[in-house]
Image 1 (tube, helix red, strand yellow):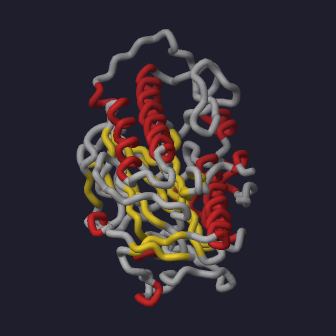
Image 2: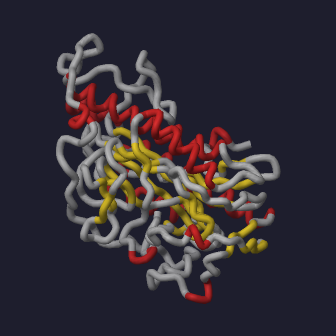
Image 3: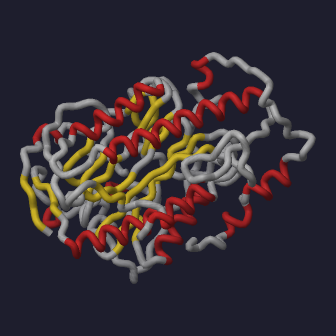
Length: 384
């Protein structure tokens, strides 16, 4: 691995805490399948189509969840077997100085490093897909965190967020107005919740990192006229009330916009492009949908160190750093239905919108190639 030193002092004014099966037979998967949930809680007579029913809710109501988020009790921190290779912060919560690199240093990955990064990224994506698939009504984010934790360990890897600067869980779960760094707890998920899972793992000495957002309960078995989400999962076409339909359809727009913003940023990546082109492209998508894009938290370089330069802004900026072949970093836009202004809870982690508006996030780890960009955290169906 080579080291590329660049003038990136302009990037250092940012919030430093930006974190950011196959155990498919785990109990959670068995208990909270969508089909069993519907069988237990609804019948064909209670679900009804409201496609022709018009409901007009004030935009300010659609932008927010019906009930604000509050902390719920948490379970103890999960343990990792001694046989698993751990990152340097696993025991103390902090990176030893000897393992840190200068803030103006950007890593250029060689082929051996790229192979390891690709393997870690693909595992992170596999576990993220698992998390999204079991985010069903009634499940708690703590139960999902347990499934993530056990699945990562089964692959002989370490869940990167665990004890990173003291973070107490193995993944981040951010619901409704929580933008990022939400701590999994015992709150049950409700139909219509907008929930993001940020899943990262440490495998063979390097980290893989990605995030995605789903709407809880917005799925059905067969494709209908409403289409599918970013995973190809069919949207619901039957509703319990016109208000439920209006709220979920608005949330779909937010999730769709954020996903498009991520890919607009990725499309701007190639050797010779400027770092600013990523944020400019993302911000244009937010504007087109009428949403805002969070400025305080950013993408980051990633390797054997979880977060390092370069730091990627997801809004319009004038950063002049030139992208070079071999760079690996994350792009992770966070869109909000209202203002992007945010604050932390007293737990020093959970970041929420100040106005209570909904938020969504997507993240990929990407590699700058000789002729463009490779998404290292692509889905298994896209692997060559």
